[in-house]
Length: 161
Image (cartoon, rainbow, N blue to C red; front, side, top):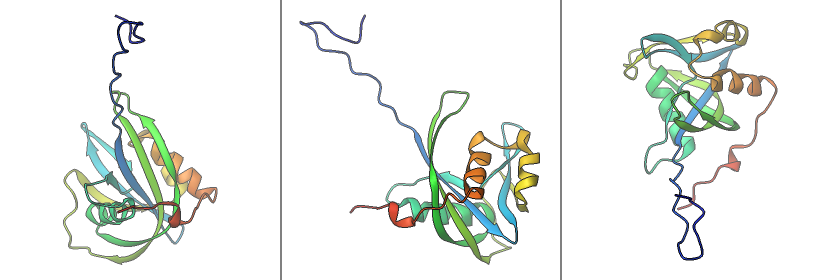
């Protein structure tokens, strides 16, 4: 049956696109970036501190929270890097908001999120050399954009009450 409809029959509704809305941070210190090593489908992969937006939370709050939960680091967001739309191999759609940040305070005794093996600092060159271990192409794309100076004011993002 066609989804375009006919003069006698309205078009069938198309399925609603519902991407996973996520945040990620590029946290820089002394030429290195903060990453997490995590267990994903039996593989050890590298990712920026990242995670899902929760109800009643702003994108900025989510980025700070996810970084703390995954690395034990409090951070100060310094800029907006960009928005990235990506579809995983299994068809899952993602809409990722990436932020630049600087470390403020480390909580070494804090337990990390489930699945996170460790937080580590790597140079951009070391991250690129580990390209086969990156959780998704979003990891390097975000680092590359950050390196190219793609930093926008946080005021671009608004939470309207």
